[in-house]
Image 1 (cartoon, rainbow, N blue to C red):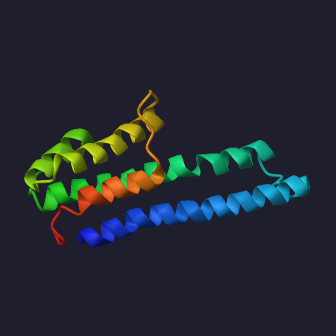
Image 2 (cartoon, helix red, strand yellow):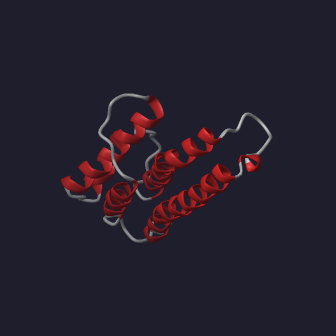
Image 3 (tube, rainbow, N blue to C red):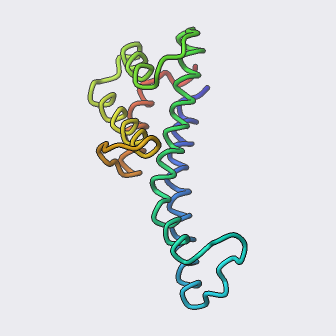
Amino acid sequence: MKTDEIIRQIRSCESMCEAGRAATAYFLEVCRSDPSLIPPTGNSRLRDIHACHDDLERTYLVRMFAIIEMALREFWRRAAARRSHPAVNRLMDRIALRCNIAVDHRTRAQSVRGFRNTLVHGGTGKSVTLGDARSYLCGFLSNLPRDW
């Protein structure tokens, strides 16, 4: 695998979110002026379209973290030649130690994991913006070997 490709995928999540927000914002305005354009299937309502628009950043943050989790598990299997399947927080810490990743990079990446857990499992974790998540995760990944 190539670290640069994983970083590109993570950056792509942010770009897709921006495109989705622009599209849903436009669609919201169109539907407000002509409610007959709201899809008749299911129970879609204007507030559901608005909720979709408002939730895109959190949705893409979950997707972004899924990309790094998959990549780190693959790194663990291939580059570290490990067969174990540690919890993600331990996996990140072990890889950080193995690759001499600075504590601040590890801490920031772990903050994204914590917020992702809050989104997926509930709780009161500290919020992280999508832009910060991209920066933190790419910072962590940039310390891995380029090819593995």
